[in-house]
Length: 79
Length: 337
Image 1: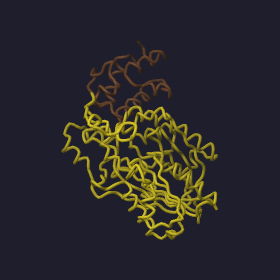
Image 2: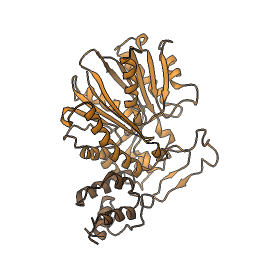
Image 3: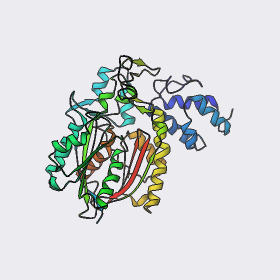
Image 4: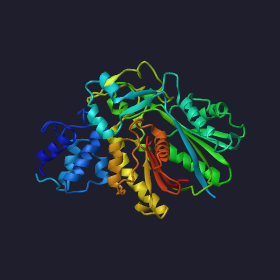
């Protein structure tokens, strides 16, 4: 999965239009990213990514950029 | 014979706030979607001037009216709330008098949220099994809605007010309270908080200033604040380990438990936890549609509703886990009966 596809996955989990999120977004900049939205993202990741997101990564998941950096470090994204 | 739950009653305030009510007031909230995922269609709201101890009093009176034990045989009153009537005196002392309990009773408040019921059970079990109390009345009562800003979508859709009263004494049938696993991580203390109103930061003109965050939620420092993503992450990374530790302690397999009664935070959370904990299909209790998240009262309310419906029956094994504000968590297993 490429970064753009992953961002669209997050958009879909939050019920937003594709392309409406950037790496800079956090729960505090996106109306739909509330507690339940957060769980929606995690559920979508569990199902779509071929990696198991561990507890430490989940605890540090406080922005799109943070998450992408960790996924890139694990080579879970293709670009 | 060891300590067991002898009975549970609960009380909900009269006023009901439905999702339709919230939608009329807040047409910009995505209530259909939130209702679908939270599983919450309505919640009860305490009236102005109606406190958590009032709700607790009614719940306890309902329990005592069932005549399970004579009030004189209650030796301890444990009262869990984060909405006390006063800084002092102890609300449990006020309740001891109001409920007509004997003057021999030990009574104390303890301040916990969603883990409070299970921690209270642990203390009650210790008192009964040590022979220091014949029966313990555990009241868990909360009125978070009094702290919630009406324009804070993050918390308003989730929380409702309620109280539960639970009687713990020496088991008469097959019932018994088993092992416990508890935990605390105070690093999460700022993630679910009412910042002002205590002595650390008294209420003031400044604390009452309202601010709207970038996600559109409005609150002041006098209101409840929940960093939802952080709190939910805490839950999904902590609860599975607590369950694993509990099952190991009690030498149980996942299938040995008939019902998993976790803190009823919201339906989506419970479904997610069921998956992460690998709980067998159909064993996770979800019971919050018409009450919402009632904090320390969710677990006893869910148990009692399922007992009344005949779903939870004598001899069945339950695993309970409360988790939330603090951060704090507690798990236990018990046999109903």
